[in-house]
Length: 142
Image (cartoon, rainbow, N blue to C red; front, side):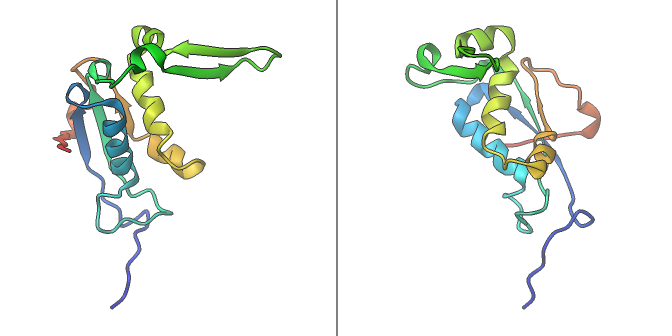
């Protein structure tokens, strides 16, 4: 029996839409990352981008467990001495709610050029409407 490996010409992609209001942040992000990588397909190949496109709607309504709403912060550095900035998740959710979900998924994808290709297939919207109606996405159930 011969093992077959996927390549760019043999990969077929689908579009999926997920409603984030039903799930917790981390559990949904890990499932979305697996779909973006293509791990749900039988012809998954680690060094090939064989994943599908994912549209996440209602990204502002996901659930956080425990005290994460009060305690979780995002770190960034300005590049200057003493330039550490800690931004609470509450602040990010008020200004850009889709960034929280994007950040969670990006951390679960491979680092490097392949991970960037996979990340570009993710479309996150804070509200219930999205712009990819023409692709006729299927609803993804976890």
